[in-house]
Image 1 (cartoon, helix red, strand yellow):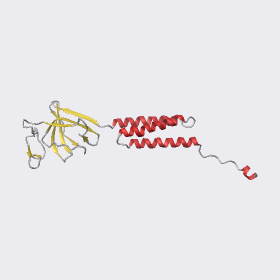
Image 2 (cartoon, rainbow, N blue to C red):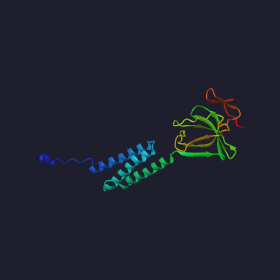
Image 3 (spheres, helix red, strand yellow):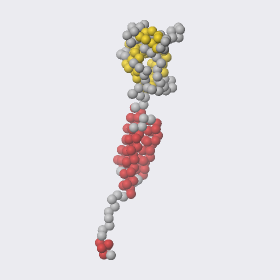
Image 4 (spheres, helix red, strand yellow):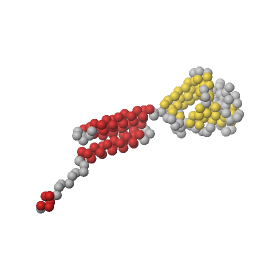
Length: 201
């Protein structure tokens, strides 16, 4: 009996409150990482960031266990992540004649084209546009777009969303007007340009 009395009580390694706080902080970090890697910003905000907000509120309610800096850090991280998601949203572009029109200089493959913007009568440097797999353009080298609208997500250009697409310049016979060195190949349903590239000037 004496031996049991002289043994000091063992110290608790962690209180329940500390364990709870550690769990909440780890859960917040995990959700922030998942939201950062979620390609769908609606899901990232509604599922991940909303849950982070709830966990941050739980930390705030745990008076005595949750320091204010952790709540502030979680809130600041949410704001930064939300700003990054908004900044990474696809950007929409619309070009319309007579101010702007696009010339198709070369068709590299079914999704990549060398295109040249003509802005207020001045030709710009040709660029390569890589269209997303959601919609394959049906235009060919030598054609001209009098209206062109797309979204750019930084990796490819999308024509699929509503009010996106293009309108070709057509002649009286309703066929697309072509550059002088390009001719329609009706057998193969394509356009062939002498030298491989359309020459408009």
